[in-house]
Image 1: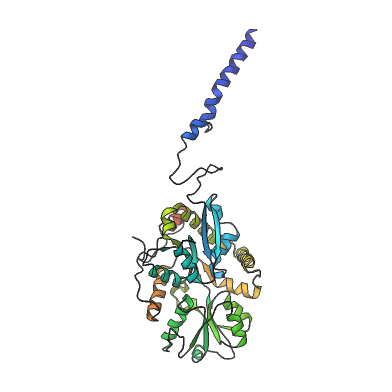
Image 2: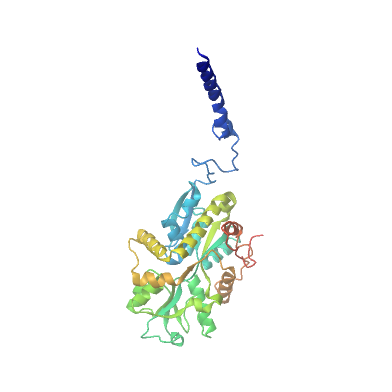
Amino acid sequence: MSAARSLNALRAIAVTATLPLLLTACGYGSEAEKKDEKPAGATASEGGQQKLSASEVRIGYFPNLTHATALVGLQEGLIEKELNGTKVKPQSFNAGPSEIEALNGGSLDIGFIGPSPSINGYVKSKGSNLRIISGSASGGVKLVVNPDKIKTLDDLKGKKIATPQKGNTQDIAFLNWIAEKGWTVDPESGKGDVSVVRTDNKVTPDAFKQGSIDGAWVPEPTASKLVSDGGSVLLDETALWPDKKFVITNVIVSQKFLKEHADVVEAVLRGTVKTNEWINANPDKAKASANAKLKAESGKELDAKVLDPAWQSILVTDDPLASTLKTESDWAVKAKLLEKPDLAGIYDLALLNKVLKAAGKPEVSDAGLGAK
């Protein structure tokens, strides 16, 4: 063998011997895998990121524009994108009590829901079953009336006005407004100076067209449906609140799920924060996305004459607007539909504020009602 060929053979042997060392240094091979430490409750995913501690998360919401964060976040995959393989199992509800029952019964993990059922669920469980972990939406509630029968707010006396359900968020707000007018209504029966007719939002438009009610204090898109049927907006509830903001939708979580799967809850909150950011940056695309989700739910999308004004009246927000929840609780007590509750601990905003801080956004307040 020539000297040159001998030298080349030695070089080949040296490269072959060195190759495993190079591969190990680059993160390949069994030794590197052994050194790849994983946090408790997590496993490595195919992409190298850490899988979360639950294989699925069950998320509840209403097919309602005031639940825009859920509608758009699910439709666009913005929530599931943050979950790194954990599957989202969406569940649609039509009423707050049924969603609270699912949460307390263990068939739901996280839910989008209004302040009144959040308060009721927290109080009935004596603070043991749920936490509010984020805001979602403000506004989107209007008093719509038959303009032939009612022209001013004073004209409501003696008329029949619908709310969605006894003790729900809009019902409480309307009863408080009536009381501030100096009028009297029995909160249980709804009878009094104004007849408060508790009517499911699904049938309120038909009741309005048939003349069995003279108006309604309702959320969107029901309010805009009534306007499209000839109604007139007599009052937008935002006008009654400081800074024109009040909580209409919260994000709540089972305390058990929060304790056992905080990493999943944090990922969902990253998704809701990014969803709200996307909605505010792309209002027209977000409106179309929400409508597409509603069509998927009901088989029918909203007409533009309903969708456009309804969408404009809703503000998506990460801020739970905690002080307004306390006010709504006080109104329910005043109406004698709720005994004075102890709401200390109803909020746990630690994970939300962690997500907001990481995103360069300001932290939000629990108004002194946070978990200790």
